[in-house]
Image (cartoon, rainbow over all chains, first blue to last red; front, top):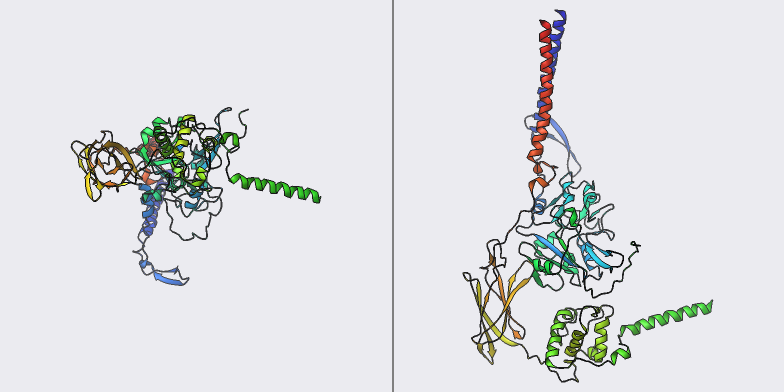
Length: 305
Length: 293
């Protein structure tokens, strides 16, 4: 009988503790949500001008902060009905690097940071070297967006892969996931950080850049919204870039302003995409470096022998 | 020591002097003296013009208009003095070999074509009788209407004959469509003796989501007329907008990207664990119940 009563005691104790826990927990939770209900209590607050003021607790209301600002929402939706593509004619590129400087100016990048980079290529031992501009490939099946733990980088319906520097926590998983090395990290204070202090962040241009976050090519999404070609496309003096909407099957050359049919351009010139075996489905097409009018003036290390 | 410095200065002076001289591009004498094997006639000059428009115009601009690209050094105009200070062989050599900003055309244009290009340049030489004389542009007027049923554009062209507008026959009409960043040429048609041209828009042409196309009609070379912007007409194929993003391809990193299968399997696993614990507790109670017996 004695042991039985002890058991009974333990049982009631356990039950009452559990009930108390639930009641206590829910009351703490409800007190967080309803500050208004508690009145009479005073609380000290620091104003923006640096003064300490005492206000009644009933004056306080829980803040309702939207998780995304209007600008960020707009940047996530993309431009309706469009599907941007870029065609890079390797036979025209002569390493003028005007695309790179235009891009760095537009996106406030340091000289060592590249959203687009002109590479010196040689595919095999006896083949001719050539120059290859390499922006983000804006894959239709992007590996980078899928590893982001905070949903900072994403793909829009118009095909652009963007990054939101306000959400980015700088973990650099996306840099590791990208097979094209298209992303850069702001290791240091960005270029002209003082000049752009307090400027509203523009998600469609990644400006102003933020230290400790990732930045990448975004096809100059802010310029596209204004009906202009991306910075690199407009800056090229040699007619390397074609840019346009795949849905309407037309691309425009940034130098000559000539417009042509996208599907014929890539078919007639046997265009290819980079590392298509990875299944990333890039939307940057390359026309082979055939019939180059300019001699190669770079240096290629002899990796092949 | 002094001698060495003097020598160094002399070498530097020599190099810089040769570079200054290098800015003035002179073809080697043996190349400059080569004579043109291609005959200087209208056919060759016309062909040369075609090649020029395709390969050279983007930098050198239109002949006689001095509208070359502002490069350093500026590409000389076809009608300029600098251009005609060269012999025919010299021009051929420069087109073939290229230098600095001027690309080589040895691998991209055939030898015949390069000589035809020289013929075209010689057409603007002050000492040579021109064979291809371009008349000043004629003032013209165009009217156009679109038939949405037949998907046809009907164009009427007139030209200014000393104050009176008359029907323009045998003129090239260029029909293009407005795209996001520029006008895409759809096709060309010739006007008949009534100044009328009929152009059928190809079935494969893509319009907007509802099939509307903004057409632009212009006249070919030799006429002074502003391109005519037509109202958007329903003559194109419907633009398809494929959905790019599939739900399952996004990582479940935030609440907005929640994926039902992941959510249910997670809740199922957690719920299952609680059920198992509950069952064990239930069994413990049953053991106690049996122990009373």
